[in-house]
Amino acid sequence: MNDFKLNKLIFGKNDGKREAQLDDFENLFYDFDSLYYRAIDSTNFLVLGRKGTGKTLLAELIKKRADGVDNWICSLENYKKFSLEKLKTLKSETDMKADEYIPIWEWLILIELGKLLLGVFPNKDVIEYKILENFYMENNFGLTLNANKVLETTSERKIKGELGVSSLKAGGEAKIISKITKGDYLDYLYSLKEIILKLFLQIPNIKFTLMYDELDSKFKNEEEYKNSIISLVKASNDLNELFLKNKVPIKVMIFLRQDIFKLLNDYDLNKIKEDCSITIDWGTNVSDNSPLVEMIINKIKKSHSKFEVLDKAAILNVLFSDVKFYTTKGQQTFKAFDYMLTRTLLRPRDIVTYLNKIAEKYPEKEVISGEYIAEVEKLYSDYLFNEIKNELKGHLSDDEIDRIFLLLNRFSRRSFRYQDLEKYYLARKNTIGEINLQECISLLFKFGALGNVRYDKNGRKYYKWAYREDNIEINLEERLVIHLGLRKKFNLQ
Image (cartoon, rainbow, N blue to C red; front, side, top):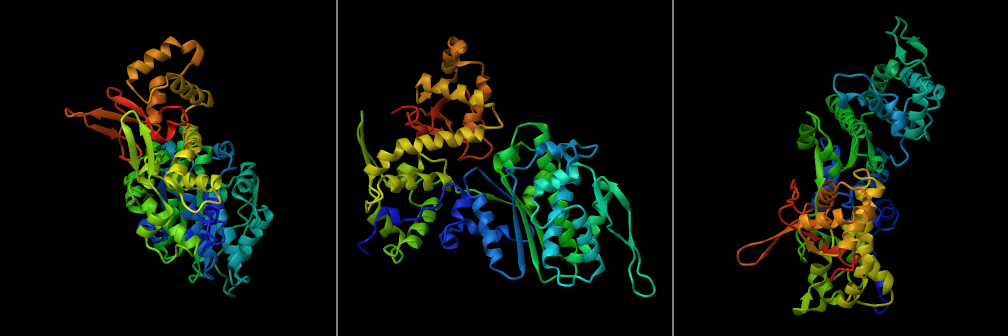
């Protein structure tokens, strides 16, 4: 009991993949809102959430638990290195632009499912198994080949082999039909789907889950990217419906940033979202009652014996103290989490990062005091600044991102009118550089760097933040305010 220090606590990692590598990962996971059980429900395949809300962590948990079950085969595909340029060369001509990538996505999904199937199929003498195995061997679709390599092979348009099977002869032998020597993947797509379904129907006692994550790493707010993601969602939906209809326990899952999904425009997407998706949302509470605090308490209890028998109230009382500081209005006092959460975008990544920075700076201390919380705020503010810059990638060029933050830094006001900022920018345009100011400010509002503030007749303030209210737009007629978590970065008090 007496050996406790802050460096003994495990709050988690900024990156979900790294947190999943922790020895006690499953116990440390806080299943807020029954996310895990909702995600593995047979009808839900689309997982949405803002950056940093825990999509990758949830995917890693599903993979971890599947790996511990004999009859559950699970694959988690990372698309950080995926080539959108090669995908473009394989799109099909359709009446609907948003559907033009559906065939190639179906192909890639089926190829991956086929690899999972070949690895566990019990009867290797089945004719369809031999056909599929030979097809994979001839095209070098090995079990270790990632989706990007499959895409590369497919883009060369040299697919070869045999996938068709004739009717059974009288003697019961099947004859393999060679459909084509070398050709386009489209020549094989229907037969691949047919043969894979036939084989999966023969192993009903094994569940298969194929997950796609980090699709946002290639994000650009351009039609080609958006159409490719729309097609992926629709292709996954179509295949999942096929599997459900045939009572085959296979599910293709997609983990996607909510802001990207909102940019997608297609007649089928809202239906899919309503019927087949879950959204990770940690609410708007910035007090000790926030589910984010429950998440942290769970990690504290699981990471050190000193706290495992204590309830939440006792842990908050023993480990945390209030933040006190002086302003022109005198001393102000905030409870620890009230202070920290108002400086986050209400995401697990933010509060985990804040607490990790305290533990890193004061590893030998035994409490998280208000003094330490205030001391570390500048380091945390630097982190949040970089997070928002990263979220803006794809929406704005790197130069535009740098210029809008340079403008706000030089303007140096925590609250202002848009018209005043515009006037300031126009007077210094040659120094700052070219930007679309209204677009930049709207995007900063969308990603939480800025909010709106208004006053009622009694002088009370009302704030509006995009990360706390769904589907709201910036009001350029109201005052704008810099988020509390960024003010140390901009040297604003």
